[in-house]
Amino acid sequence: MKLGSVALVVELFALSTLAQQHAERDGQDQVSRRQGDFTYLPACATECLLQTTDILSCESDLSCICANNTFLTQTASCVSAYCTVREALRAKAWHAEVCDSPGRSQRADVLSLTWVMYGAALIAIFMRLLARRSGTGLSWDDGIAAGCMLLLTVLAVLVTLMVVYGLGHDIWTVKYDNVYNFFELFYVNEIIYVALNGFIKISILLLYLRIFPKTVSHDFRYLCWIMTSLCAAYLVSNSLVFIFQCHPVAYAWTSWDSQHTGHCIDIQAFTYASIAINIALEIAVFTLPIPRLLRIDMSLRKKIVACLTFTVGFTVTGCGIARAVTLPSLSSTNPTWDFVRLAELSMAESSLGIICACLPPAAHLLRQLVHSKRSDYAERGSPFNSKRNSRMVTPLDIWTTGDVEEMSPVRTETTVERSWEQTMTQQEKRRWGKKVRDGSEGSEKDEDGLGLEAWPSEDTLGESGSGRI
Image (cartoon, rainbow, N blue to C red):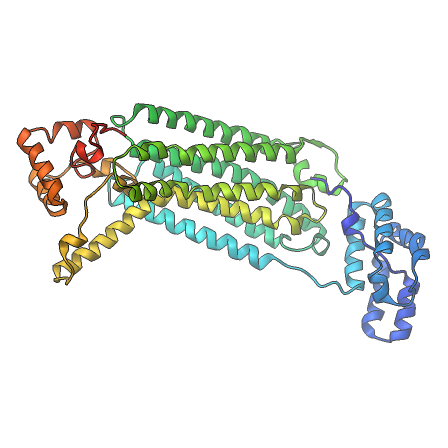
């Protein structure tokens, strides 16, 4: 990755004679130290200083020289033409020392955001696995979600190492050899990011397939498999392109100094295209179950809540769009400083993706904890009306359990009827009683595979008889 023009890192301005005059006039040790630092300047930068001193109008005022933008601009243009990147960085470091430019650092911000987001994702995946283990058991979607957490761990460690090697600091304050390490870590970071986001979408799609069994909606499952194939193709193709973006491969992290030979694709243009495809896939994945939810016969409030469960995923899309805005930093002349937002948004997007993938099972675990507390209060004699606190189990429960199968009728008929007797309203009891008398309550519901606990009768899904999602 080339730095391009080095104009932004080569603002040089002071001659040794000017520093000497200022030292004699001021008599301070700090200025004398600056004068000695002049020997640190590369020869090309010294020559550029000699060529631009004629525009100075305040030769003995160091603070005036530091603020002379015309002088700095002309000197920068000269250095960018005659100095290497390494020489330019040395010159900029000298300039910052002479001008007392305050050192900048964003490392605390980067580390805080990285590990806070990682901690939130870790809690979400723990709740998901705990809910599944205490329910119907783990499946492929849970395994892929756990794998995503491992990749997020790698991503967090990479960002932390990038901070160690200069991320969050100006590049001229970073040791020259550390810049190579920084770019190599960034190279691996991008590959892990692409793979991680692909696996997150696949995990969510497998969650849909688990929620909707074959007896519910063949068309929906067919769409899920198509989307899974597209996400897998995106994952593989983008990972390969990022891995082999340069020839030789090492040129991806050595090209920045303009001292190595090789060639690369236009990685910035490709990244724009990759982000556009990623955003399109995310929108498709997060909106896929919404039409099925809207067809369920339940109150508008419950429909809104159910839809919001999945549209929360659009926060991930928002991070992806914000990340696209930061892409011009890929051609920055101060990458260790300008890549901060890119690294933060990559970490935030990946963490939120895992949280969204874990939201339905995690919500089910929270629901169990709340109901357990309510049961404890009821056993101790709660002053609240038990009928008031009880409620009808609705299709919305499917989204908070994250698994239709774990709501399948595994209990005895007597136990199930007692459960419905405790939770039904009077109208629902009459409706259910009619079904029992007609002898039609079991086969129709079990045929749909949705389970007695999810739907007490077809009437609760709609009077029109549309009992399927």
